[in-house]
Length: 351
Image (cartoon, rainbow, N blue to C red; front, side, top):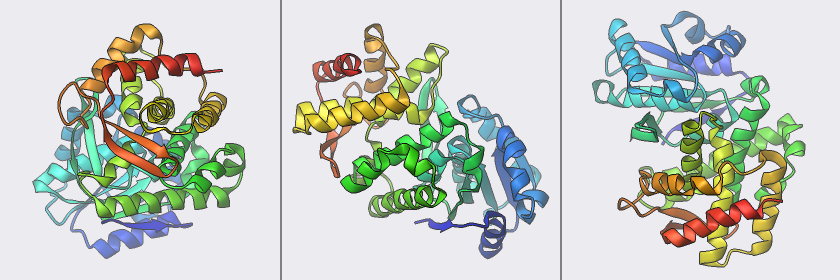
């Protein structure tokens, strides 16, 4: 299980962490945007300024096997061994792809993750899931590879766009929905949380602790860890649809809309309170806008959900649903008609 470091001095923490791990060689993996915007703020770090670095293409287009090969080539160039280390500095794409490269190189070398996005801090950087996209499917090829350390700081969050902040916030809301009603209710007032660095920091810390607790009990997603997939079955399908249309949306926005579908299914299948579905619908509309699909897109969405890697058998989408807030139910398999009903209702249900 990775140890988490929440720090107000990330440059110092990165260096002390790397020194403690005693690697013979190291490679910093980042992306071209982070290299320009965030790394200058870490200029006091010897690791950031003096160690070999590769800056990959930002975003999902760079999440390919070709990019992984570039990282492996760089590791070979610097003479990396099994005692070596990859330091991932970036958002979820960087920690996913850097972690996957590390998982495979010489059958596994260590990683340190420094997430530079809110989404990365509460989701991708923790838990050990790594991967790349393949044939239009998100994270279709990957491995479980736990980072040795995850260093979390609010320093880079001020550089984020509104869209990036909203993306991470959706994963925070997801974490609260599956775990703690009081926490969830506190997050519904997004302005109050984001306006206070202290409140935001505590909320991020709570999300990380919740995820850590789940992952510690089920590191390879055989059971309990599946609760973290709440909203993701439909969410990943929405992402694929928008990429196909040439109108991509952030992961968090797709998951935010996916959670409405999951909550409607939760009401249909498990008796989740309709009043809570409505309350979430109002939150979704206020911050994340109108639906990401139309009625004509439902067959495509069904196809993508049917081929989701979480499914136990091809063609049968698996959902995590909620009996109530903080009471998730894994391995739910709604019928095609129920999923279609939930998608259709989510379109009509928007104010």
